[in-house]
Image 1 (spheres, rainbow, N blue to C red):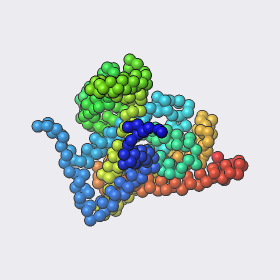
Image 2 (image 1 turned 90 degrees about the horizontal axis):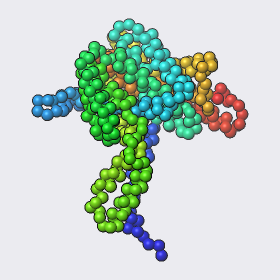
Image 3 (image 1 turned 180 degrees about the vertical axis):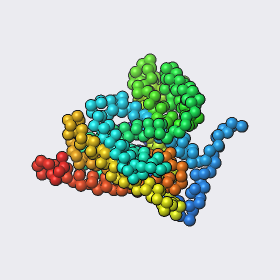
Length: 460
């Protein structure tokens, strides 16, 4: 008769809990889910800001929140802590994603990345030109960069809704384009929306950067140790007048792509430590386990390089915490308070909306077509022009990044509210158009596979 070991005697409640948590973890890693959460947060903000409780909505984000001790107190409204502090974590993840792609991803091979890079540039330049064609003069021209941004999470989430019928290279192309889009957005924020700079703050930021390099040189692998130099970089950029969230990008690009070198291979160390712990348990020396357990945690940590490990750890917090909270705090535009009668705010809203809906796909597709036609680039295997138009439509989902740039571009309340409305409307329409075209495109691919014929109705 087979014996049941103590390890197998687990309560049914524990087994069910473990299964539920595993299912929840898989569910949270579905990209479409994070996009849906973001959409719900924006919808709640809009409803709240236009409900009888609208005063409480605006009061909440202007509530003061202080950090410090004794006389050293840093006091800012809650809105600041979300947009300027928490969003640094979002930009940290963006920076690490760029670092990974440069090291071993889509940006590591310039020939492979040249077409999505060019398409991303087209998807920035054309929407900006469309916006300026409608708002080329006056203070509203400051919003030219608003429709140039792409919300990676939302765009990839909508693509995920289309299922596996869409070729895998479409997702890679869209991710690469969105990453380049983020790089350009960071540069735009740094050079065009940072105002007059106080150069003394760069010395403080440089001190934080030196501390990061010093810790890396000493082989310090714990991410928590880097919080202090990260805070110093953030404070330095805040002092300069540059947007402090850029500190996240700086830290992300500095994150190592290789693990800390240990005296032995992490896998060998895990095997040795496991044997050692088993021996201690069998000999009843469990009080001697603290040393091997500490060594075990270190070896386990270094199995993955920091750029992978930290990004994976932060992703759920960013996807289900930082970004929905940002949307909740910034998407609440009160329709009653929007004044479109002045002319300029109306054209800001129209310019942003049209640039996202039409400018983005036109820029992505036209530049891609031109480079392929000239023989400078080739479409990836499995992709045709239907795929390129799908990517262009999804790139028109600006949402989080576009709202972020809007707040840097405008201080006038009417123009800011109009810009946000343009972003919300343009992103929503782009998502619907992307979904609609994606369904038709996937159906065309499916019919082609079944029929076994050549091109079908213009599909590749």
